[in-house]
Length: 259
Image (cartoon, rainbow, N blue to C red):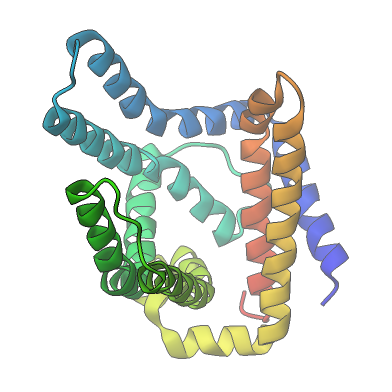
């Protein structure tokens, strides 16, 4: 696979779609901001209604509701990425909010289902050790966790990450299949998913994803390190990075000859 061409084509798609269409860029920025609104609202509410020692139950409940609303509202952005994975060219306008929301919710459900085994591994390996650690620390301030507890938690985290990584390889192709067909069941068509990855080549597929991750990390790191305006630039260029990433995945999927 020509990784240089893959990167170049994805970059050109993002550049032509956003630089020449600032309206789309602005709309994607708005879709990025929307999920943050419930969290900001929770912070403002807590700041004006809770004086002195905070009510931990109210604090936790409010935060939980804010997070749930933020996840739900992020469906608009997730739904838009389905347009890119379907192969819309040039970059489509941000329209049809009902469909964007519906596609985004289904996308998140697919991702959640794929991650259930990793969540289960975490709950079985890491969570018990963590709860034991916290309970012991609360009961005895001088408590120091033993080597077995620490290694158990680290081992559980490592296993969870490995399981999540493997599942993520399948989930990525599954999401593209969902975007192309509109059928959630196709996201879990493992025989077709294995066939697609096999045609790309497991080594090529994983290497391509590693390259994409490194590129995005480097760009995000450089933008974030710029004094004073680094955070602002990271936010502004977020849609460009997102479009580049989705187009990259689209091209990688199509390299299997499964248009």
